[in-house]
Image 1: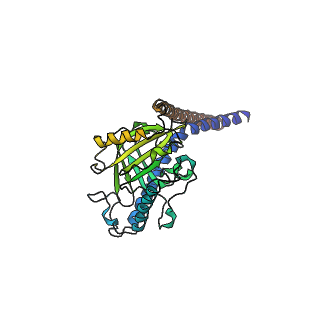
Image 2 (image 1 turned 60 degrees about the horizontal axis):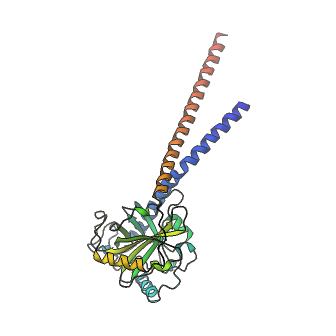
Image 3 (image 1 turned 180 degrees about the vertical axis):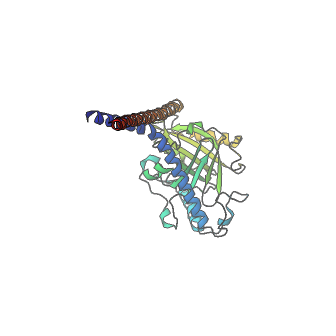
Length: 335
């Protein structure tokens, strides 16, 4: 009896160890599936409310980047209100702009519209290796599932005098999210897909700021911008890593990963550098992230080995039991 208890305890310990080692990979796989599911829901909603071509795929668009069937669809009022919101915050100087991780922010009232999901688009980048659902408002729940537009910054519709600031975790429960943000370089292309069109933005500057330097992500007069922001350094989070991007109309979806920067990009880069409160010391997170990936891979390998040992032990135990049973049956036959 005692031997059975010890054996059962050993099996449970092996299984618990294997689960711990597998957890980061399971979280990653689930996170990727969840992101794809949320994006698919968004695409289905857009297609279902399509006023023109019900069979049109969410990936089909006109030459100007707009989805041709939504010029006068059910989302017209929402777009008009988002653009009005963008003008309003610009004219008011973005009063109330706060750090993305304050979590208590007034947001655009998306619940007033007939939407079947809170996802209002998605962000993707080949260099960043992400495709994440996009939410309005940096709540705990939103940042746990994707990226989110910071309150008091522009809605993701593009246009002059806009800067859509999108926040994301540096990784969450095994899901990478903005973990590899340091891989982005000047010229890389980031895509934003909203209900009406797909927008391309070219990276013009990367930097780190202090959490209280929120003015560093304000709208730049005359510009159509996208800004990514996340915690830095990785796991320590006492700074913010910022990626500034400017709208480009020349990129081809699934055809252009990066573009050459321009003289205007360099001028904007200098302006953005000049308006920072200070330039904190930059500490790269790449080595730590790579080390974590190696440990994660080793953990997965260890889990596979543990499961293999358990399977082999179970097979041996089963074989021994069969041998004993056969011997017992043979002995009973002789008697």
